[in-house]
Length: 244
Image 1 (cartoon, rainbow, N blue to C red):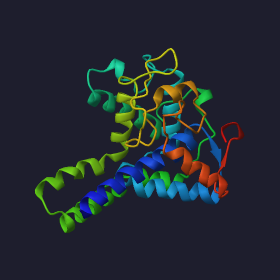
Image 2 (image 1 turned 90 degrees about the vertical axis):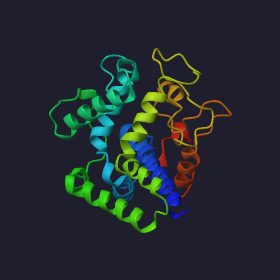
Image 3 (image 1 turned 180 degrees about the horizontal axis):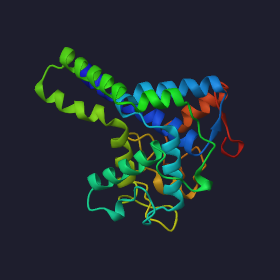
């Protein structure tokens, strides 16, 4: 039971800060906040993504490229140019690495307006940090696992962020239905996206990329949007007025 709680907590907390901080804030600036809360969200993203921490600058640039070139050869992670999800993930890793090491100069329109914290970016992307988090995951399982099969979950902890991204990019552009014709292959994989906290409403999101609510129809529930509304009410963040 403890292992299940730990796994689900890591899954959803990592995913929440990926969609809330990296996607909706760093990539799209769907809300504003002060430097204190921005740094707080930065730290929480690092802690909960752990060994799979994703650099906000690199994430934002790649995501903006994805929107600009959705499902074309210039899309950094369209599933329609790879035979399987693992090839797509590897290509995404290589593109991400180029942005981390600044080996690739992004187009001017993709630059800027994303949070940067050089110290935490360096720590979070270091091998040492990733190994420490990996060691902590293993130690937790050694202490609390009650069956051998539980240890099979450990690799998911190691790669939590990229796994979330792969699910969204693969399924969200291959399976489901479309509310809008976006001139790409984006789909809404499910009408109630609890497992991926709204990220699988890709068709809606590509139609309205700066809308904080990824649901479009009355029955499409984006679990993160009410949380953002609550944070807006509490003055932790300020949602852009068009999307209140």
